[in-house]
Length: 118
Image (cartoon, rainbow, N blue to C red; front, top):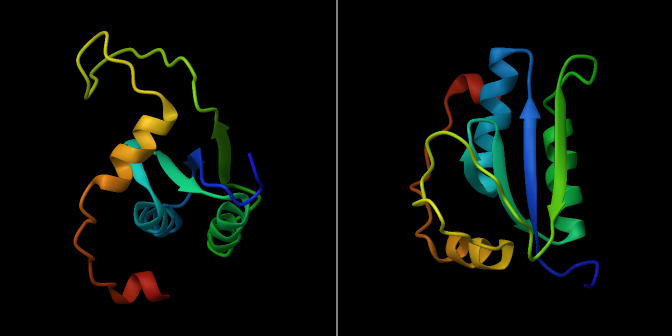
């Protein structure tokens, strides 16, 4: 797979401060699709992911916050527990999930409030 080919990334975060948490959440919501409270599926090439992480880095405290991006291979097994969106036994590989996410209508943009701009 080439460096700039679109790949599926799992981007997870643990942010210690509520204000920084809201900012990171909003930025990732624009970049990908939420798969859990603090985890997003993002389709991007290496350069696109680098740009996203660089943008996120501007809003974290490196001593207290943690953001990680994991490349998901095209075919990977996923085990789940608890409440799930898909019925039991349904398996969606990374390529299919990425296509489904890209085909979803874009969410309505939300206006930025003064706190986000600070």
